[in-house]
Image (tube, rainbow over all chains, first blue to last red; front, side, top):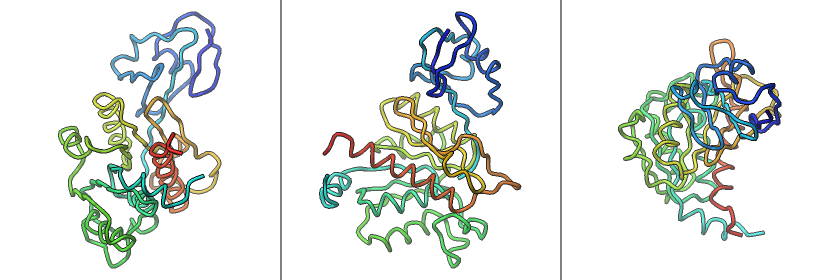
Length: 67
Length: 196
């Protein structure tokens, strides 16, 4: 499937993945994240159950300390 | 293109909330005030310390003062007629409505990632229509070209998204100032969109 991940086109072999699976495939390693699927907020407890499909716009934004 | 008086006429009608008055919040506030934003609501529980002076908009003789009080004094030196609402409180889910519900745009200007996440989740859940300009990733020096803005709906995140501040990669004035001003500039862009 083809998705937009953080504004970049990505092709992932397969039809449907959960948000957690995509995080594992793309090795997102930070603990604090904001996840938005098609501009909708996905909460931590929804990472396993939320499915990402062909054409979706996924943003996984790291939050790191500093300010 | 509009002149400054035309820009200021619009910005003077706007209220911006700033959560945190450290390196991001204090510098962002100064830029927004200089640009003519009408009202600033700023919340922070902290006091000015020596370690803040490497990047925050405070002065040596203000060490020990409550940050929002010191920041009010500094902002009033830029514009003595500024409308400022300062709150010496720790921003938490039980006071966000009270503090920021009247704001046209909210700026997330915390230090700790956990607090950034708390505010972002709260605003996206409870005020999905309100623009929120956050920051993530600004420690150290160099690679200024990696500092950018990621947008998702009404959420904007400024910074490189990677360089976490810590003992061995401290936040320093130039990159903190760049990111705080990316935030201020994004606020202006949001407020002035489709106005000219």
